[in-house]
Image (spheres, rainbow, N blue to C red):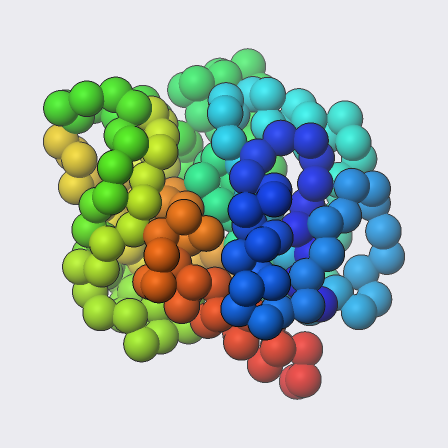
Amino acid sequence: MIVVIDYGIGNLGSAHKALVKIGAEAELVAEPRDLSGVDGIILPGVGSFGACVTALRSTGLESMVLGAVDERVPLLGICVGMQMLYEGSEESPEIPGLGLLEGRVRRLTGAPKIPHMSWNQIAYVNAGSESPLFDGLQEHSWFYFVHSFAAEVTADSIAVCDYGKGFTAAVSRGNIFGTQFHPEKSSVKGLSMLENFVKFCAQKASC
C-alpha cells in the first residue's frame, strides 16, 4: 500500500492516478493514521513552500510523515514535496521545513526564464546511477519540471539538472527520496521511476 499525503495542496489526483496506472495499490490520506500496512508514502507539493508546509502542519499530517521516517517507511517527496524535506527555503524564510535533509532551497539563478516550466535532462551524481529510484533509466533521461526554486546540490543529491545553473533534480538519504521534477507528468520515464519506488517499498516491506 502506497499512501499519498492529502493535505489539500498539490498534484494529489495526478500522483494517485499515476500509481493506479502502474498497478500499485494506492490511497489518498487526509488525516493522520496508523502506519500499519503502509509500505510507502508520497508527499506531493505544488505552489509555494510556505503554503505547503503550513497546510501539512495544520492537518496534523506532518507527524505521520515524520513517524514514517522514524519507522523507516520509504518516503518520496515530489516537487515542493521534495523541497519541504529540507531545513528551509528562501521562498518562505520564516517557515522551517521538515529538516529531514540538510541544506536549503534557493531561487533559481542564471536561468533563462522563471519559472522553469519545461522538459529537461538529468545527470547522475553521487552514485545516482546505482539508486533504486533510477533502476533501468539511462542517464540524461528527460523529465518535466515546473518550479522557480530548487535545492542546493549536496552529498544527498543523486541527480542534477542544468538550467542556467545546476540544481538538485533528485535526492536520496536512506529511505528518503525526492524529485524536483514531476514523475507523474513525465510520460514513460516518470512512470518507470514511480514503479521503481513501488518495488523498493515492496522489498523493504518484505524484509
